[in-house]
Length: 70
Image (cartoon, rainbow, N blue to C red; front, top):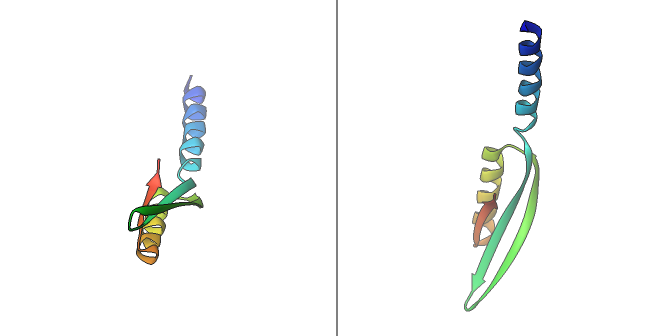
């Protein structure tokens, strides 16, 4: 029984640590007058906080509104 708990904990730990980084999609909308242009860029193998920071930095350079898609 004790070995099963340890094995389950180890497997759960690997799954949890493996899911810390994933691919994120940053969607930017640039508006000009009555038209708008939407672009998407994939941020690969990144944590949520790093992907959010990278997407927000794109927001500053494109003069648009950039957000991470869920």
